Length: 146
Figure 1 (cartoon, rainbow, N blue to C red):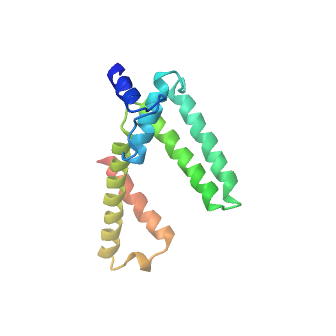
Figure 2: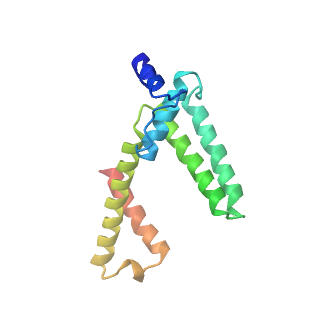
Figure 3: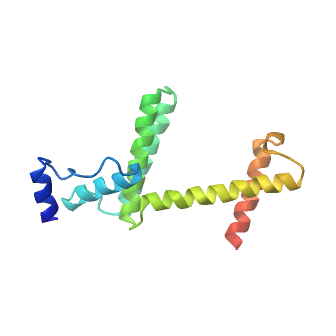
């Protein structure tokens, strides 16, 4: 860390957050920024505190829904994502890997939903959201049992 600090000083970069590459995936960068801040004590004391912050951010997002200002909504969703990156860090998880896993799981389940409907001679366009959710829940239940 001392060497990195010296390198940043040589590049005229100042501050605890200096040198975290902008080119990183956003979730990874959020995790690295928050880890840097945590090193100097700017951190939630425990996971439960992070979850409380997530609930606070969700309430702020809900409050913005009525106005539906895209910039404000984007700001609130961004805040929630940043808090989620912090939650992953506090749990010792890589936020980017968590999201990749969730993407894979969603793709697998959604493809299974499409296949089940196809076996019945239906497409997604043929069924209601309620029907899709029923099949989705069946797919999910079967995965959990396995």
